[in-house]
Length: 295
Image (cartoon, rainbow, N blue to C red):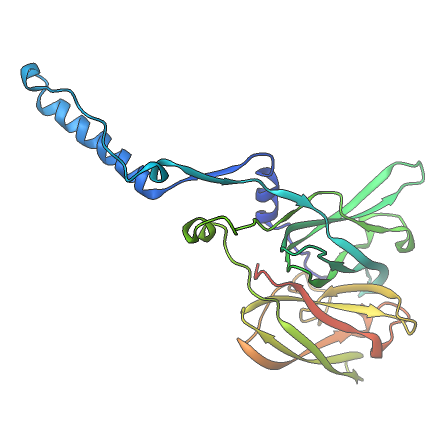
C-alpha cells in the first residue's frame, strides 16, 4: 500500500499569507531600539530619587531613513498550464488504487510556487466532488514537470475516465527581486535547478513480473522527487506514480522523495507489473522531475 504525498506545509502557509504584504524589519533598527529601551530603563532605576540630575533625553539617531524602513512585496496569483492528465485503476494484493498522472507547464518567466492541484468529478446528483488535493512546491520558469500520484480507489466511486485534474486554488509567482537589495532578496529563499533526467532503457523483468528503469540523473540537490508516467501505444497518458521503490502494497512502499548522489549518476528503479495500468506500453514509459524544490 503506497504512502500518500503529504500536503506541503509551506504551500498552505504561503496561501494563508497571500492576502497581505509581507513585512520584515531590518536588524539594525530592531537592535538599536532594543538597546535604547534597556539603557533608558537602567537610567530611570539608578536615578529614581535624583530628579535634579535628570535631563531631557534625545531620540537616538539611526543610520538614516533606510535603516528604519521596511521592505514589502505582494504575492501575485497565477495558474500552471495543465498540458495533459490521465487516471487508471490498478489492484495490488487485493487493494484498489487510482493512479494519477499529469504534465504541468509554467508559462511564466518566473518560477511558479505553491502549486495546488485537485482531483475532481461530478456526482450522479450533479454535485461537484473534490476527491483529493496534491501539491508541487515549485515549477521553474518556463519549465515542465511530471506529476505522479497514487490515491485510494475508494476515495471516489466515480470511474477513472470521469475524473479531472484541476487547479482550483491559486498558485503564486516567485517574487520579482529586481528592485531589491541582496539582503532583501536573501529572505525569499532559493530554488535549485531541476535535475536533468534521461531514461536510458526499460528492461522487462520475469521475477518479479514488471520492468526495470535505468536512467541518468544529474542533480545539484540530494533530495529529488521524480515521477513515472505510463502511456499506451498511442501515447495516451494512463496515469502515474512517484518514482519510489515499489516492491509490495506496504504502507511505505512508494516514498515520494529519494536521495540521489550529487552530480551525474546512473540509477535503477523497479516497477511491478501490478502497478502498471492495463494497456501500458513499456516503450512509452517516462520518468522525470516532479518537484525540484527538495521538499
